[in-house]
Length: 291
Image (cartoon, rainbow, N blue to C red; front, side, top):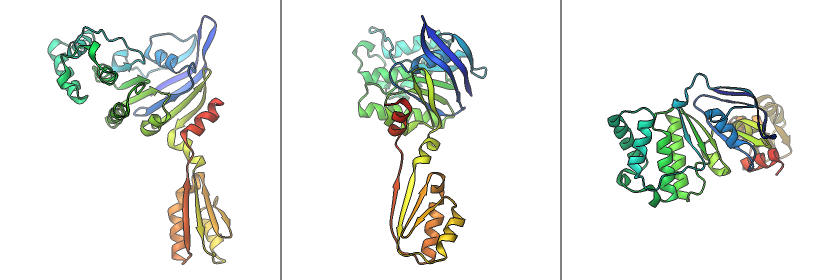
């Protein structure tokens, strides 16, 4: 687990992070959201150890920097280096022997669909190829924590899907992934947890499904209910709302949907229509940031 406690960060008098506390559970895919200048990249750089906080503490549970993979938002790729040569060089700098570096790079190139591009110069690569190369370098040391700053920025839909698939693969392998993004749809598709930052402060955080659940509603339209049905439904699901021909399940009560339907059908009630409404991550984000 990564624990950030009461972090304050100032740059020449400018407050970048203001008493921010956050816990990233092991194995989570944690998305950082927020407007430009909210402090997302600053937080990632603090966790990496690139900069020091003005005050507060960061506990990486003893995780050495060498066990953290990092893909920055803006990476310089030396244009005259070939992809394979570049990755092998970084592997050697990370402490791998020549043979081991070559083996690891060959595996990563195959994993990212670059096995036929080993000799391609970085200066001739597309944005998508560079991003795959960058993600490969982040995984050179088989890190247990992977930090990605805007990993799908500037990619076409195919490139975005590829990055999502790699993030899911990291999650399934038990890795912890911490990423920042402005693309809410990408976050919704891959993240287990979300934190929203605004003006250096943490304004919302938690498991994504729990953030969305309170705004979920199921509405069931029915024929006439038997007189005994309302008390039975209330006993089954205390927070259910019952009107003459409509039942509403909101928030935590949504988990009762299956049992409520079964009770209605067993009683011979005419179930005419069922609709579900979900909160969107965009709604939560805009409310949290005042947008």
